[in-house]
Length: 200
Ligand SMILES: [Zn+2]
Image (cartoon, rainbow, N blue to C red; front, side, top):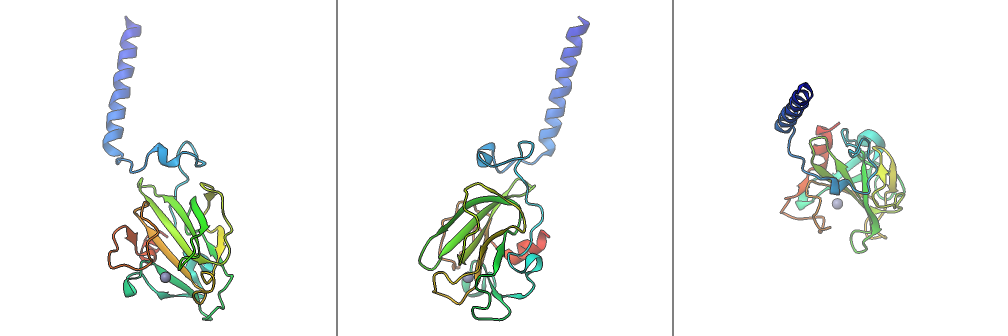
């Protein structure tokens, strides 16, 4: 009898704790399915808490943003070396935060080599960072863990189409198609500089 009472009480306590827990933890916006095949720590993704700039690690020292988000309907930032022209050709591009590689491939056309990394934020949302026109790709294994500041590629010209620069986007809609880099419709996109500055 005593045994049964103890068990019942423990079950009740457990249920109460679960209820309290559920009430205070926000609805996760990603599921276990999202992190399947990702290396995890304690069954959680490696979180992206702090963000840095993708060039001139960590503060974009030596670079300027030639065309910011929203200018001419631009959907990202264009990072250029202060020297102008192709002086930044081959410079290292760094992951802006901890995350997992979605893809690193030549999309041709105006995109060239494009790297996409998925970041899991500790508010249970996800964002993608996208690095375009790369000269070299230094990462390739899908779902590989990438740490903030890791070298992931080098600045390029999209196969000679542009003077060397990094076209850099951030997206909170992780399922957006590649798109065209410019649009009046910015839904699903983040202002990268604003986002990074808010997450240093
Ligand atoms: Zn651009």
